[in-house]
Length: 143
Image (tube, rainbow, N blue to C red; front, side, top):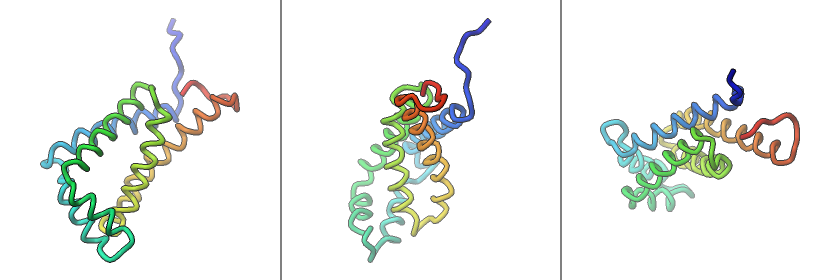
């Protein structure tokens, strides 16, 4: 008889988000899958003349560092979600990362909202679960 922990829909959402973030982080290293450098260049062009131009240009001028930073952040947060370790720092980092993605890429690729918003929703659910568990609210299970 198994005495393991029972998963609910928040756990499954966390696992799915983790797997997708891990895959996306790995994919960043392969331009054949996703040409991140070209996306970042086009983002900088789309943001010219806006308040986002300085940050967009900084990112576009440092493509290799940006791509590696994003790849490592996505893969690490994905692993944290999959192994259910360090989920609060991972969720907070993802919130910042996906918010920046949406802000910087929106003018070039409006679909980024629909792509990244579900990840933000999962991050908020994970953080809510952790808060409830820490403060003994509701019937939150271990996060």
